[in-house]
Image (cartoon, rainbow, N blue to C red):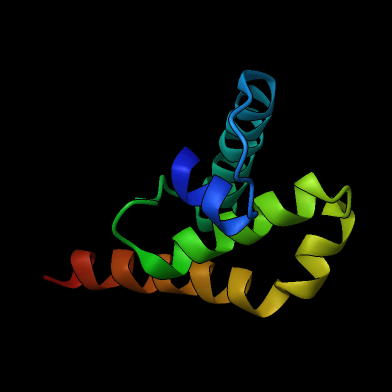
Length: 93
């Protein structure tokens, strides 16, 4: 996920401090999205949730995290509803 984030943010230089900072942002973003969804998400295979995580990282890196929830409200709601729908379908089987 680190390399995908570096690519998404157009970070082309090698710097351990930047990588450590990005890893922290990625972890916090994944924790946040897991809480919103209600379950742990697979950021490697689910392109919608991966896209949300990359955008979370972009907002965090640009010190605009307070705007993320506002600007991605519908996507966050769809994430939660999708998880709930999947859980409901599993219980019905």
